[in-house]
Amino acid sequence: MRLRSFLSTHILLLSGLFCALILPLVSLSTDCAFAAASDKPSHRPKNNKTKGTPASLMPATVQNIRVFSTPARTRLVFDLDRHTKVIEHRPSSSNDILLSLPNATMSQSARSRLERGVVPAPFVITQDDARTITVALPTETIGRYKHFALENPPRLVVDVTPGITAPDAQSITNAAPAEPPAQPAMPQAKPYKTIVLDAGHGGKDPGARGLRGTEEKDITLKVALTLRDLLSKQPGVRVLMTRDQDVFVELEERAKFANSHEADLFVSIHVNSHPSRAVKGIEIYHFGQAKDQRALEVAARENGTPLNSTGVGWEYLVADLLTTKKIEESLELAWTTKESMVARMNGHYEVNDHGVKTAPFYVLRYTSMPSILAEIAYISNPSEETLLRKSTFVRDVAESLLNGVKSFLASGKPTAR
Image 1 (tube, one colour):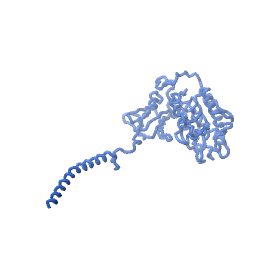
Image 2 (cartoon, rainbow, N blue to C red):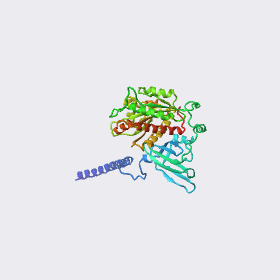
Image 3 (tube, rainbow, N blue to C red):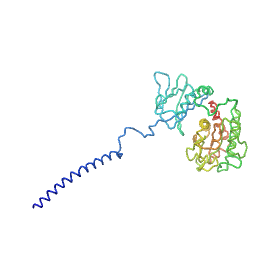
Image 4 (cartoon, rainbow, N blue to C red):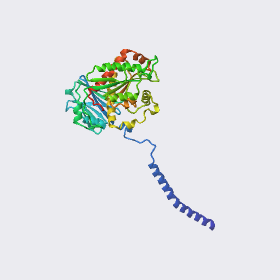
């Protein structure tokens, strides 16, 4: 009995000692587990008071501001990286109509254009705060106005009637040398503008072919010759062609021809093609990175280069100030031409507008002036191939290109030279 009592007593003492040592460790381990759990992200849905995704909360950016003016109408265009809403209101304290773009900012390029005075009265554009842009339209100086959005890429357009005289380009240049030229500016001695028309393909290079055997090289030459005749009637314009007959001209020689004649504009005319015969419409290109696979494929076909090497190296070229200036003006020429084509053709034909795109076309890269490449229709589409074979359609295309060039020249833009 004494032995059993002795053992029971010692067992109780050892149990108490074990608990005294182990329980604090268990408690510490439990506390550490809770602490670690609190540091890990919870998988439970949080009650987040911020609505929308981070991308939707970012302000839209006005990348460029463009103005086109005729006696009948003046158009203000905001090139945006994405759409933002427009709020229209009329304050009781003034006669102005205010168009506000909440959650929007201006790029450095857009601000620079405002500082240089390229936007004429009555447009008054201000950045009221960090994220609001306002366009003021004085009612006493305009007749009617309207604003609307366009896609591909996103744009906000403001039209006022009647038209307003645009600021003088020379006085703007003298007033605010905010963007110094890459080299000393030479005085403009030429009393005329030189426009080089480039009829795509030719000779041994037929270009794309339609189901009825229509060849791209023949259509581009017909359009270019018709456009040459129309442009030649314009005062102060000299028109040259990289080819005026069915001959083969290397892409490098086409660019050299335009540069050696100190051309002010370069317009290359082509006809598109697509694996799907249902695809049709127009699209205008200027030099830059291909934004999608299709644009890269078009450039590869027109360049006659493998797809995997067509876009190489473009990013190293656009850093040059002169090239950047040329690209800005090429974009403006491209938009003006595309909008003129849609406006002119849409009343007579069913036009699919594929917009303005960028791609590394050889002739656009190596010309030193504002340059565009117009894909006027899809020869792979049976209905558009039929139209391309008609002289009336060829003339309509030429006249729409003429209107685009005239609008660009009327805007008084300096060339990139």
